[in-house]
Structure formats: C-alpha cells, structure tokens
Amino acid sequence: MVRACIAALIFALAAPAYGAPLPDIDEPLRAGARAPRDTAVVVGIQDYTHIADVPWATRDAQAFYRLLIYTLGLSASRVRLLDQGASHEMIRDALAQAAEQAGGEGRVWFYFAGHGAASSRDGERMILGQDVRAEVSAFDSRGLTTAELQQVAGAHGSQVMMVLDTCYTGRDRSGAALVEGGRFVVPSYASRAEPDVVAWTAAGPNELAQPLDAAGHGAFTYFVVGALRGWADGQLDGERDGQVTLEEASLYVSDSLAAAQIGSQHPALVAERPEGWVLSASSKLELPPELDATTALRPIAPGPASASYLDALEQQAQAEQRLAADRARLQALHGQAVQARANTVRADAHDEWLRVQGISQAGTESGAKALRVFIGRWEDYSEEIDGVREHIEVPEVERARERLNELARQLALTGYGLVPPIQLLDSGRFQDGSGAVLKARDLGPIVSAVSPACAKLETARKRRAISWSMVAGGSAVMLAGFIPFAVDDSTGETLVSSSDTARKLGYVGIYGGLLTMSSGYTLSSRWGYDPKAFLQCAQQAADPGAGTL
Image (cartoon, rainbow, N blue to C red; front, side, top):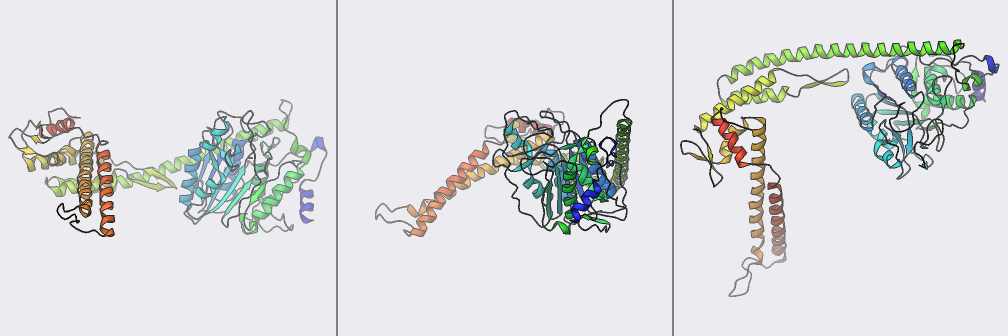
C-alpha cells in the first residue's frame, strides 16, 4: 500500500500537453560522500561496428560515471570509463585491474550499457564487446558471460555490484534482431544469489531493455541513477533516512517503469539480503521528483520552435563539456603525479649507478655482478600511481648494459687469451690462432656478451646440450631397465633377480628411459643453435672488427 502511494505521488498525472519535463540526471549531484576503497568500470557502447547501435548508451555511461564520482564518492582515479572501442579483452582487463585495486577491501562496481545476448551453446547471459560481428557463433567468442564477470570482479574477495542496462534476446532497444534470422532462447534466470555479489539487469528473460527518449537515456539507467541520487530514499515506508538501500532502489525502479507505462520491462535482481546493501548515503540526496508519465513517454520533438528541445541540447552540451574538462583535469593531475614520482625514482637510480659504475671500473667479476643486479632492478621498473601501473624508464640501464657487455668481453678474453681468427673444427669444437682447442661451452660467456642475438644463440646451445643430456641419461636408464631380464646362457637363470618387483622396476626403467630419450631428441631439434653463427659471434668477441649477428 505504501509503495503504491509513493509511486502515485511520484507520477501524479498532469495535463498531457503541458506535463513537467523529466528531471535532469546528467547534472552532477555533489553529495559529499566518500568511498575511497571502491573501484568501478563503466562501459557504454553506443556505436557497434558490425551490428545495430544502442541509442543513448554513451550518455547512460557518462551519467553513471558522474554518479559514482560525485554522488557515491568514488575517487576518479579508481573509476575506468570505456566507451567506443571497448572490446571483450578491454572490458575484462579493466575489470581485473579494478578488482586487484580494490583488493578485497572495497566494493567493485561494474556498469554496462550496450548489447547483450544468450549463448548459443547453453543460453547463458552475456554482454557483447564493440567488435562483435553479426554472427550468432561470434557472440560466444566475443561476449563475456555474467558468470565470468562475477568471477573476475570478485577475484580478490571484494563485494561486486553489477548494473547491466542490456537484455539477452539478441534484439536492439527498438526490438529489431541483431542477426537476421538468428534466434536466442533465453532461459529463466536461475542464478543463485551469492553473499557478496549483486547482478541487477534491466529486463527479464525475453524482454527488451527500452529507451526513454524524452530523457535521452535508457529507461532502466535513468531510474537507477535517479534512485541512487536519492529518489528511492523512503521507498519502503515513506520515511527518508538519508540513505538508499538496494532493496529500496530496486523497488523504486520497478515502480517507476510501471508508472511511466513501460510495463513490458521488468528488471531482474539477483542478490542476497538486498536490504543490507547501502548504495548511497548523504544528507544532500535529492527528493523524488513529481513526473508526468505522459511526458516521460513522449520523445523530445526537434525543431527550431521547440524551446525545450534547444534547452535540452544546451544542457547536454554543457554536461559533455564539464565531463571532458573533468577528465582532462584528472589526466593532467595524473601526469603530474607520474612525472614527480619518475623524477624521484630516476634520482635514486642515478645515485646507485654512480656507485655501481665505480665498482665496475675495477674490471672484476664483482663489478659484473653489480651491473647485473642494477639492470635487473631498474630495466622494467614500474609503480602503481593513482591506481594505474606506470612504467618508469631509467636512462642509466642502457649504459649499464653497454658496460656489462664490455666488462664480460674483457673478462672472457683475459680468462682464455683468445687469439683471432677462430675456426670451427669438424669435431664441433673451436680453435683459435694460437692452436688452443675449446668447447662451445667454454666460449659461451664470451658469446653472450657480444649482442642480444648472440646471447639468444648461447641460450639455444645450452638448451640443446640439456636435451642431448636427456637422450644420454634416458639411454642409461633404459639399459638399466633390462638388467632384471638378463639370463645366464649356461643355466637359464636370471643374473640379478626374478622377483615381480624387480621386473616391474625394469619395465619402468625401460619405458621411462625411452620416454626421456624421445623427449630429449624432440627438444634438441627445436632449439635454433647454428654452429656457424656461434662461430661468427666468437670471432666478434675475439676481434670486434669481425662481422657478427
């Protein structure tokens, strides 16, 4: 009874021709709330490349983005907005980063406005990335199921709040099929409610997620954003307490769609104890508006004589300008933070480089070790700044590599006293100008220091050597496996043991050795070790003027 009264109050009917315009949800409501540990991914795909567009999806995502930051109090650096070009991989990666950033301490929000469909394999609900093609089979490969979204978002133990303004019938907001002749059977939602996961979808099975053209938004998103701005406060008992629970918001949205004469759309909520989820809380929440249901259904008619139309265009342009300015300001602040941190890191790395450089001047193995440690620490250095992993380049790393190569070459030449030219012998070994014969492994340290290509060649040589060691070891094990079966020709008795255990061990040795030999031989053929190329690298090590890889 209370719900009916409140819905009647909100949508009290006025004269159809002179109804009040729909309230604006694009203007940010600065509620003063703070949610520093929450993260969010907001996706709005309006222009699909290969299938029909989704009217208002971009504005829907922008409205929800502003709601999260200004009304619910999320940090802008922890909210990722994806619009055109949002592919399957981009959405999944952004959600995984948000989950990692929340770290089990905050709530992970995921909002999506775009196309959805049901899997052709099992009917499971899924959302579609921007690059999906107009083929039913392609939907499965380029879509993300709701189960996968829950798994990724909750990977680190955070609460997950999913708001999905989509349907799964394989049709657009006007009801036209996304794939001509394609049929999507959407089973009744039978998802089991999880304690820390909410999945709130715009429509029930085989229903459309409809637009609300007069507001310039999807109907579901319009009322969801309004509910969290404060319109749903008191929806249950008429008493406003400065906060909106999931239960209040869900009832408000359902009642509002019905009052706005969108009776064919029934949002689906999968949640455990929705009364326990507080979605927004502030003393500055908005009062519920009095809407004209007739006006809510009537699209804004464009034309020079329509003052309301011109006002709506101006408001939309101003809102988009504010959003662009906010994003530019946040990007600039992030760039300043990255630059400040990079300066500090590079100063620390430079101080360390001065110490390492001094150690390396002695020309000892200790100097080479210090150089390797320095390179390992700084070559791929990155830090998380404002929730984004940023790579910080250290210029001294390249100088350290050059010094390490030079020092390694000096140490190798000092150790072996190589005299050019170096020749490759038929035996596979190498001989220098003094007549000294060396194995390839003896030249390995020198070869590795010549160039990255030579270092890869030395790695391939080592791996191939290991592969042939496997062949040799497997041969030995296989031969040992035959021992329990050896028989004395004069007596006909086994030489070692005739027990079943020994024979079983023998079979294990035979087959295990054979498998090891086979694996080693297969691997040995895969490593690109070329003795002639190795020779070229060794010649360059002994005589820098020689050609190399």
